[in-house]
Image (tube, rainbow, N blue to C red; front, side, top):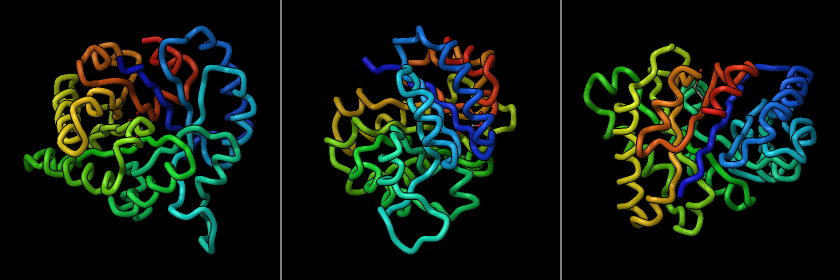
Length: 249
Ligand code: 13P
């Protein structure tokens, strides 16, 4: 069965000091949660220290992006090889904020994904439509294009290292959550795309997280849906109480 995976995407929040204080508390509060995967994704600057602090805990660490090369003249970037050496486990790729502000295209995300896998890291690949795309009835089209672009050339054997996050852009940071049914519909559609591209077994094993205004108040209903296997949490992952409550759904 698919093990639930709850990840906190801290975006550009929390200084290194704040990050360490936070994970020290989190580590103690969540130490008994064994039946789900827990991931925190601090800024790259704090990742190595957060890894150290969480070393003997049940909480894994992710970063929010990684380059398609392992080294080179790419000012301001960090490679998967560097994250790997620092003990990071997961890399978020293709978040809508990076698609919007940092030129992440499907082709680029695909190149980054391949390099993440080459470095034996796991990936959380984000897809999702904007409000205007949803209103124009293009949700499935958009998501299909993103999934096909991001998964181009990815082999069946790599699928176990990949989690997909469905994050409707209109639900991110807006307080507007997709209803559990709306979310599940797209999750089922994504699973179908994976079945077509790979096979039914691979699709049945793929974990698909929902992201977009996930809170303690809505996590239970979301997780009760057949095709929702976890959450990628933004704002509510920044507070101990709300993130703890979400993980303990
Ligand atoms: P919010 O939970 O703040 O809506 O953000 C979701 C998100 O973008 C997680 O990656």
